[in-house]
Image 1 (spheres, rainbow, N blue to C red):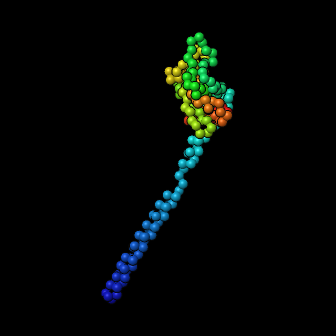
Image 2: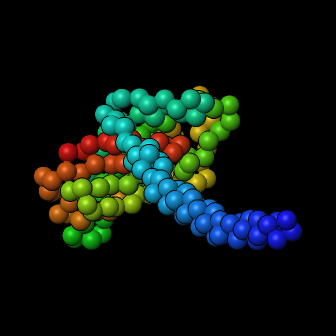
Image 3: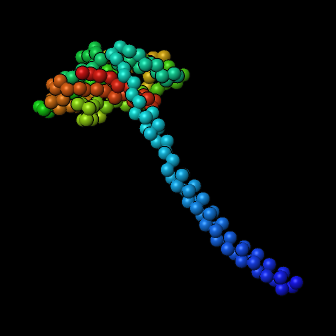
Length: 200
């Protein structure tokens, strides 16, 4: 009887030993499959990229309202060797290209402050030009003062609540860009949103 019991215990021990590696292998296989499944899951980046790239067209005279920030209206643009304020006084600032192969571009925007506090004029928007869908040109800004008689710096000027400022976004561009019939667009970034103004 003792001999039979010993055989049974030995058989049970061998069965347990034989099963243990199998279970361990199964567990590893399951982990491997789970890892593979996790790796193959597509990240959500394309959706975020699409949101960043979304551009809203804006036309001349059309007003874009950003709640509690500003009403923004593109009133026009100029391409000229010399850019002056709308009603130049006897003594006024102007921007003039001294280079023979370049000229100035100006995008003119009116911005009405809808906030409860003044907005620094240089915080209204960022503008850059895109020529032929591949060449980029940065701009710098200036703002009219004294009813359009002169220009002043945007980084020292605030637009008070419910007041309107006239801003010029300027870039010195090659004559080739100025005279070409290829596309020229202004990308206007306001409070994280991007608007596109077609010049030609």
